[in-house]
Amino acid sequence: MAQSPIARPLIETLHRVRRSTGVPLAFAGTIESGARLRLNHFAGNTVGALDRVLIDVGHGLGGRVVEVGRPMVVDDYRRTSSITHRYDAVIASEGLRAMAAAPVVVDRKTVAVLYAALRTADPIGDRTKDCLADEARAVEQRIVAARAVVSSDRLPSEAAVLRDRICGAYAQLRTLARTLDDPSTAATITQISKSLLGDQQVHVERDLTAREIDVLALAALGHPNAQIGQLLGLQTETVKGYMKDAMRKLHAHTRLEAVVRARRLGALP
Image (cartoon, rainbow, N blue to C red; front, top):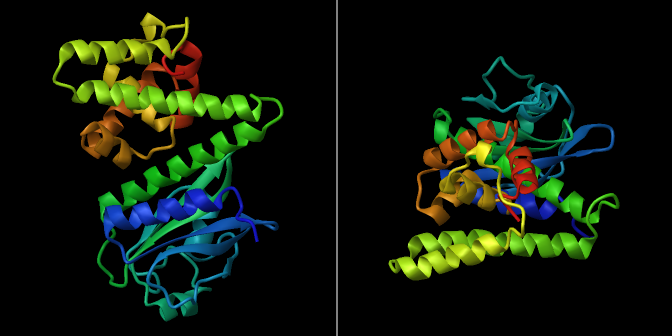
C-alpha cells in the first residue's frame, strides 16, 4: 500500500523528536474521514497496543488536542483530570505516564497530532514541549509545500521542484559563505547566492538582517528550528528569536507566511 503524502514527514519528524529530546517513544496519528484520529506512526520501543487505535475528538490527550487546536501536556496520563480516560487501558499496556501532544494544523484544520511520551511520571520539560511544537510547525510547512507542487492553480510540478532546488542551493551557499576564512571567496559565494534571487530584491523598508534571511531560507526547506540552529551554529532559542523578528517585520503570523512574503519581496528565490 502506498504511503500517504503526510506519512514520510511524520516518520522523519518522530525520529527527530526522539533524538532531540531523548523520550523513549514518539508517535503520531492522522485524521481520517469522520474526524477521528488514527494512531499509525511510531518511533521507539512499543508493544503495539496503540497501533491503529482510533481516537475520538474530545477524548484522551490526542482527541482533546484536536478539539482545542493547541499543544497539551499531562504529567501522568491516567491520573490527570484534564482529559477523559477512555483510552487508559491501551496507555497502561504501553506503560506510558507523562505525555505531550501537539496538533499539525493546515488550512485551520488539524490533520495530525504528534506525541512524545515517557514511561515515568517525571514532568515533560520545556525542551520537549518546544521541540514537539516546532516539529508540528515544520510538518505543516512540508504539507503545504507538497500541496503547492500538485495544485493546478499554482506552479507546474517541474517548476515547483526546480524552485525548491534553487532555494536549497541558495540556503547552502549562504551557510557556506559564513564558514569560510577567506573574505574574498566568501564575498564571491554571497554574490552567487544573490544572483539566484533574480532582478527583484528585498524591499529596504522591511530591513531583514542577513541572519534572518539565513533562517528563513532554511525554514523554506521545511527545517525545524533545532536543525536550522545546527546548520548555522546557533542555539535553538537564538533561531527562534531571528524567526520571530523576521515574522514581525514581514507582518506574518506563521513561519510559512513569512517564507511566502519573503519570496514575494525577493528575499528568497
